[in-house]
Length: 201
Image 1 (cartoon, one colour):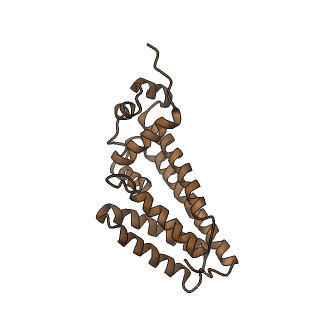
Image 2 (image 1 turned 90 degrees about the vertical axis):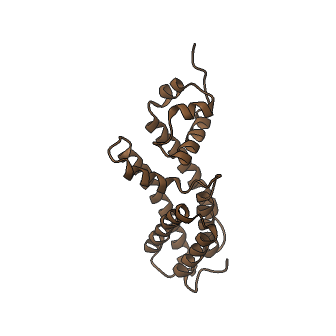
Image 3 (image 1 turned 180 degrees about the vertical axis):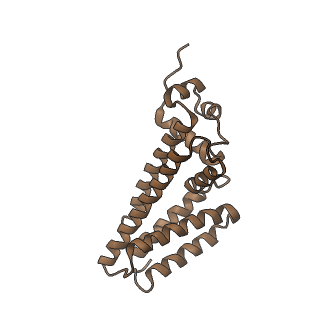
């Protein structure tokens, strides 16, 4: 019997949900095939391996997340944009029941625990690529804010500071699950970066 055709994008969405909840090592192609309603052999034929499927699913997630960030950073004062950035970041960490955390930070931590199992370098590059693109978006907004008189610091250094805080928030979310605490840290970070500048929220 010929395996039926399937919706490639829908399979990537379902696969990423599994990887996000259970990790790469905790997810099997059988799990994904079951949830997607397709044969496991069809996934092998389409993607070649679980690791290759993960990389495609993560690329899809990264593209969607970057579009959401661009919208969040698109309007308002610099303070309002950074507030929207952190709001989206924390909301993403807290998505799911139970909350699933940050897929990028969780993925990097899983790589460290699975050194040498075949996924390392390509996945690390994918994770680093998304973080670099997020950093660039934040830096561009800080530079634009500086041109409007809302920020007088070093845009590159401040962007790295903000991104470093988001990585710390990801770890704290896993450890404590305290969303109000995460939002307080985010607000304090914005105050530190903008000082007396940055416009109103």
